[in-house]
Image (cartoon, rainbow, N blue to C red; front, side, top):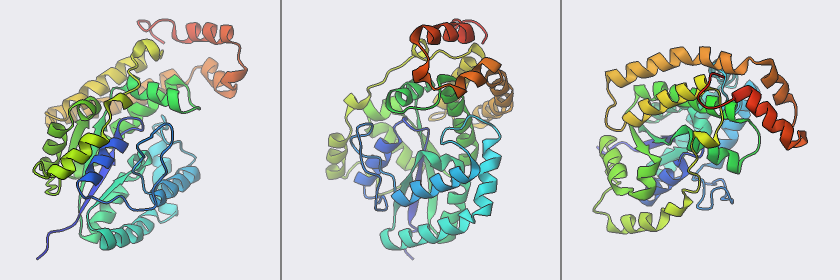
Length: 319
């Protein structure tokens, strides 16, 4: 009897190294279904994202009126409802079954995947494939700083809150399947140990340290100079309660590669229970609601600085 095919879902916030990790798995023989999203200046080595997956997720998020990094706790329920109304599970099953039949072992990556991960896990089980999740971990200030440098749109408060919301949801959703975690800094600067440890934990025999040709390809593929944004909280001014919760969330995430145990999971349960209250506190300010209605480019720099001082004061004060 032949071994089951593998489907690896690469999860994590956008700008956390998920594209690089998916590219590494591809070098060891897992397939990224074509056509793929084309590379651009924000990701010159490519995204390793199947176009069908990105377009499908985009359509569901639009139907739910949810952003890719939506900070609202309610967003999870809106996405679930949109998925049911669109028969998302049925559509994923049809597409995934065809891809597994054609290509065998797959790597599926898209930052929007976090919202629909349970559907993808169920679809993989329907194909008879063995599914697992590999999650990238990167500090929130670096993620938000990288997003601000590459994308227009949401402000710092929403970006940090969105990171917390998505990473807490991802940790919960991945509990039901084999999972492993890789820190971005480890992947960029010394990839072999974290990748091979994760592959062993997830039973991915094709990711083999004795495959010297693949190892050389990955050495050439990973470019440490792409670690271009090393932002700290000094670069990401947000209210103190939100920063504190982000720090606690990162501490719990940072422990996962070595300590995916009941104690760490209990800490995530505590943080998820706390998040809606912190989000309400930092999102409910009338000044912030007004600020979100005004395009930043029309506000004079002196006014922006004054409003920032009024809303955020210093990193050591309550917002």
